[in-house]
Image 1 (cartoon, rainbow, N blue to C red):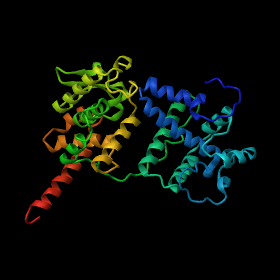
Image 2 (cartoon, rainbow, N blue to C red):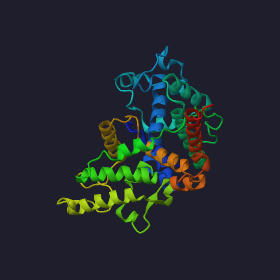
Image 3 (cartoon, rainbow, N blue to C red):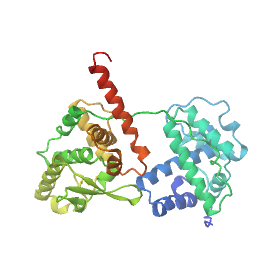
Length: 356
């Protein structure tokens, strides 16, 4: 059992011993990435705020008025009278001592989970987002059962909301060429950005995998990249000649830059200060080039991954090979791209056949 700390006001749920234990389990036993851990922590924080503040929790964004606020909640989960000011002042700041929060977390039942799903529905969360938050709770309480903190998982009887089938968004060849030619590779940062975009499209790596690449992961003799994917699984991703040339140009400019001696030499892609890039930085760079070349601003780094997979299948690659290249554990995850290619074929047929 986790040793209880002396009562203390909580402002960061991730610091609670029970949740810290769970997040450490995800990272060190399940080998989840730090990014995934942050997502789980954020989902748990929102759930904890709901346990403390009831239906009045989380006022960031539109939320329909709920008659009586949290009055309809089980009395165990109604904010204590002394918390009224804190609730009104800052919904996103959790004001409760560790022992009380632990009691509430371990006292959750299926009805309360259903009430939480209703709370998310009232705030018009997408079904995919709700499903992810429910998966977080299912995993957390499964962990609690294994540790002996509770005897049954309160989420085990809750069905995941049926999600809409949405085909992945992707770019056509003309759009890809337009985007990849936008960065000015006459400067160090421009050459870096060109190399990053070329690599994303050439290999289909996730943006988290891109920023985790090290210089030593590049095997120019292949040419291939060693990619560290989810669950610490490694795979080798073939690298196209355009991407390889862009990387070589960037690295040559980096070595010759007067500031290069102070750069971290391990990461493949570094920021202007010579440190490893973040996923957020990559997104900001992409946004800048989308604006410059006039493409849809909703395009994300993951769109290039979808584009890679779709173009591979459109040009005859088999599904198993694409599964390996993407690092998908299950082929069913990869099969969504076959729906995309079928949709494109049908569109081409309708546009081209005289009697379609």
